[in-house]
Length: 336
Image (tube, rainbow, N blue to C red; front, side, top):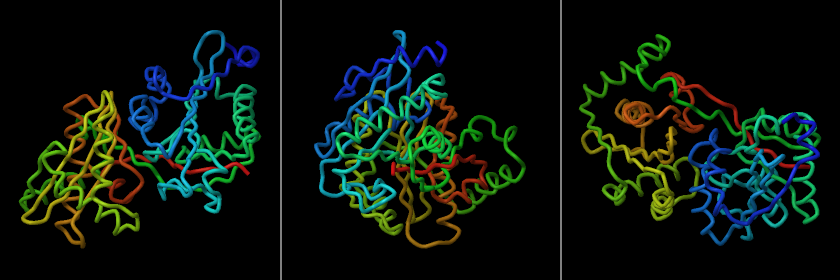
């Protein structure tokens, strides 16, 4: 349907639950991965600190978008990573558009709905709905080019760059044919170092390793300045296990008494690397453990399981780039 026709035919529904929308959310969130799936959003609804509204947009009987919007009912923001770009704004005065978890989000609109007058109409109406409630719009962890498009539509938006989100898609399959020589050399050196250091790798269930892996992950996060606790780590992983259609894999790598862990979530043709824990310190052994966890183990497992997309987060971009990762610039925005 041409964009001009979409404007007049636009139907806007607001639903309070992802129940019944799972398939449509999966279709519209296919470029976000597991964090945008209907199963994931449904599980998050059990957190009483939050409520959700799903803006379902259709035209001519065809679905053109589903925009999730989240309201926090706590006095302060529960997740420090999701504090809006102007941190003095309290939760009552702001809603999170697109997502509140997983560090990846999008408006979830079809290509025709992302252009011209239709896109401006959607952004204008969304802002108007929450402006009447005294709330600003925050867009956490969006692709920066999408944030720029939202601002260009006429909505004043402050944008903060969050980092470069890594993708390991190019490593899947026979990377000896697809990667540049420097990345191939780095991966081969990793393998040689792992053999020399006697690194032992394994794929486990979370139940098998939670007793030592949860403290390791929480300690790793606290060293990076993020508040965490083993029980919170366990809660996050168990949440993923409750998501219908998801498979949780726990990769471990060990050399002597030193061990590391990475938790990944598989959904459809996606793998998301969600949690990592490494022993403290630095040096060759730790670097080699990291390389196995962040690249070699998930890529090997993904290649065997038909995975086509691997999202690896915004940390340690130099190490990931050296092993063939590509990147997308992401940021957060808040309406003015």
